[in-house]
Length: 340
Image 1 (cartoon, rainbow, N blue to C red):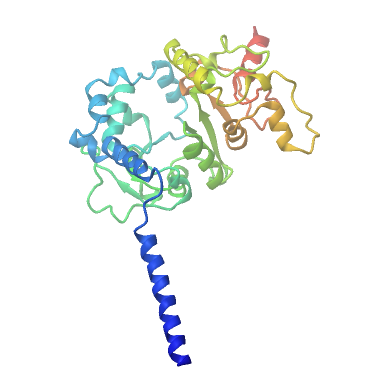
Image 2 (cartoon, rainbow, N blue to C red; image 1 turned 180 degrees about the vertical axis):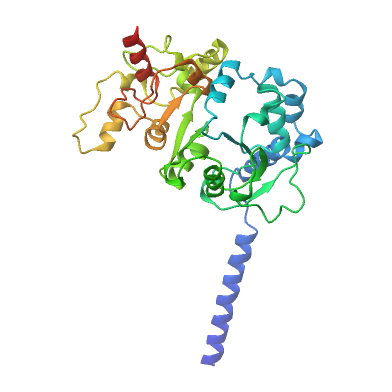
């Protein structure tokens, strides 16, 4: 009888456990989970790469119909500036966009011969994994923008030729390609990378690449950020169209400054001897993105083209000569004033 009671108790425990599992399985999904699914579906519908060729979604067809409405052509001065730096060095383009969309944007922004201005073009780069993973490069057809048959196994950096268009890849193979085609010892080679994503470009590069890789952050919000006692109006590094500055100004009124608080920034800088880093950040009004800039990038500019408008030496954030809070503007402005 005792054994029978124990068996009944064990069976009841098993039934209870199974009932709880079934109840959990059929329980309502977490609150708002359906909204997440809708957002993911909307993103895929509008931005999934196959939608470009299929004329699907609400994004690609509009861009293809009127690129002038959304894309600003690259200034001729900047093209000359970049061309002047090609002798003795190599210039590559790395983007997460797929080949067909990249070709559309670059054809309009740069011109039909844009690929000849780069020694290597990397599309579908899958950043930030490009800097942390080891995916192989795959050759891309320059006309169809599709991965070439037979390149599924990938190609190594040493096998790439100048002028190639490739997909995926990783920073180690890219460095091998650059070192092969630059007349300099590998230990003396430096890579300067410009990126406009603080997480996918700047932070990922600083975290996963060697010290001979340097990130320059491109952050258009710098157009409306202000440093106490400094004016950006006359600084050539911050030249930009009034329309962009006006739009960002309206955004700032709604969301606030992205880098630092104006009210906090007007106070004096904290005592560097203070042992409390959190106290320093509070006193300076530093936001998380300013911390990312100062920690992971060498410079920050509002627009890459602005570099073609100055001959001044720009000091990095780590340099003792740098006097700006979170950008290169102040150092350049001061040197220009001294020269005048």
